[in-house]
Amino acid sequence: MRILGLLHTRCLPFSRGHMKNLASMVLSGVVLLLVAGPVVSRHDYAAQDRDLILSSPGSEHWLGTDSLGRDNFARFVVGGRLSVVMAATAAGGACAVAAFVGTIGALGGSAARTATAIVFDVMLSTPWYLLVFVIRAVLPLDTSAGVTAAVTFGILGFIGWAHGARAIRDAVLGMVTGPWIRQARATGAAGFTLWRAHIVPNVGPVLVTQFLLLLPTLMLGEATLGMLGLGIPEPLPSWGGSLVELVQTNTVLERPWALVPALLLAISSISLRALAGGESS
Image (cartoon, rainbow, N blue to C red; front, side, top):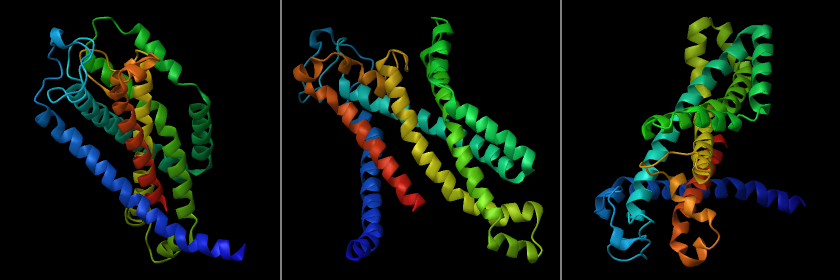
């Protein structure tokens, strides 16, 4: 047992470092694909060719075409860009709210801690995904696809801020009670100077980790809603929209290339979570 413990201690940092490097390489490849994909595909994601409906992959259409004759690769790449950008925007907004609320909960005294603890419990115990269904149901039918996409990701960001806020509150509480903060106060640092020079730099890694954890959650949330018909609507493409075909069980057998968006989404999500684990270690 002592030998196993020693091997675990020696090998764990090594494996984490390699996992982080591998995740960074994978994410760099995904970003390159999303950036360069529309250039090399030579197809407009909205262009229809009714003579090539549900065609197989080939030199002209690398992932075949959909039921309207649109190029699957072009729609997959452009939809990935839209999903990632909007998920990153929503995750950034959620982390900003988390930083604000978490800092208040840590530095605002006992009343603030109690109030934020209640808010966290309510946010984390309420099935907020029902809110997505309700809001999507009451949106007018003539609402533009862009507005619907912004509302969808806005709700997903609202759902996800509480986890980060609680983590930041706990991190700040650990800092303000730590010996190095007491030493900074003893040397005369106080108020805004203490917060800016000693707390904010140490909260940064926590925020980065929360962002990296929230980003794949929002991407998967949009994909799930897309498979239910509640994601980003047509004519805008999205990764969730690319997965709608997989609802039919015979799709994988007849058109196995339809799994490519799901596989890339899974690889991206795993890599982001692995990178978040590397940042937190």
